[in-house]
Length: 285
Image 1 (cartoon, rainbow, N blue to C red):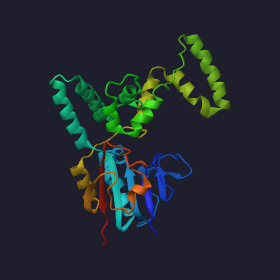
Image 2: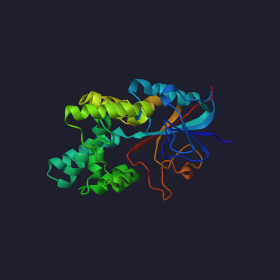
Image 3: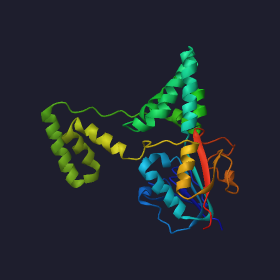
Image 4: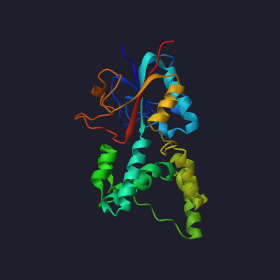
């Protein structure tokens, strides 16, 4: 019986697979810190799949992650990796730049988006970043272009763009802050987890924002590196894989791949159209 491993699955998983993510999003998902390795013996799986996870590892740690994927893979097994496609983004950027320079308003809007797609996920200091701001706007000038780039993820964000949260006003005067702090300390003694952040905010003041940025940058949301078909193939080869080949969302060494609906929807549309899909095989020694 074939054994399948889905790493960093998020909300995208299948019941016949072993599904792992940093936090469990469902009863069918096992929580595991993948930066510390994959918790299975050597040669445990016939297929190892990971979608939009590798780019969240620093460049210096990406090889270690893929070597772990290789370790748990059986001989003749398949590794399938999906990442944002740097080559596709770069080509779209150059096309947008050229057309915008010729005065096209449509492509000027596309230029603004592709710059966000290229850089925001790397430099942002808060969840969603400038991309979320763009997508939450009720009057996106190039919505069809964004949908072509992001697929169903953009559709979901469009639905959620009016669900913004309002922050509670800060206490301005020192006496009021002190009284509020004392109340929070008393409550913290009784309910420590619930009131910890309120106390930190009051104690740190403006420096609380720096703490939040640091927490966010370590949370795993930001992209640490990007790959194209050359650099990803080279990395997979260094990890010991053979027969490395770029794929479409529906092509695979894996039998009946599209039946799992991990890279495609039920109607065949691509879940993440901005992806580079790459596969390799672990040859028997």
